[in-house]
Amino acid sequence: MKKFKTSKESWVSITELMLPSHSNFGGKVHGGHILNLMDQIAFACASKHSQAYCVTASVNRVDFLNPIEVGELVTLKASVNYTGRTSMVIGVRVEAETVTTGEKRHCNSSYFTMVAKDGKGNNVKVPGLLITDKQGLRRYARSVERKMAVRQRDTKYHGKMFKVNEYLKYLENENVKLDLD
Image (cartoon, rainbow, N blue to C red):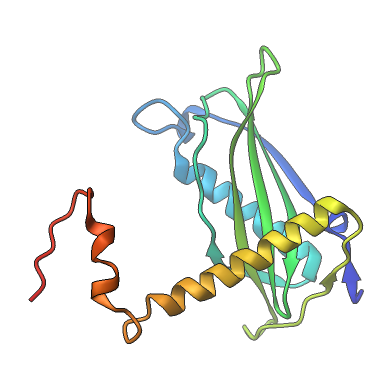
């Protein structure tokens, strides 16, 4: 196995026609179906990079920017943005295309943290990421910042560290009522 790989070596893309069975009660493609496809392509990309079975450890924010209609083609693109010792951050982009016009819309993007496993379920080391362009460096740096922000937020809001009086101001102009015992 290579010690370092480029994101292009693990890049994966899939396109699927959205069927009536994929729709929600509003007639649009169900967000859960799109999330399922995103998880599948993140798995494929991470497994291709690590040459190991991979599991989803976390999913960073998913914003649904545009609805997807039944009958449209949905293309998902995945690439490795970051590598740790046993984990990878996989960037996933979703685009919908109206078949009759060729018009394409960015529907959402997200970041999946995937962990490589061996046959016994133990974490295994993954190849590092070989960055070859400015875009790759930007994506890697963004992943590092996201990782640091999560760590800082988790520490800041840990039960023993949380100070109620410091956060009362957050309730101003919000639809909330505080009734602490």
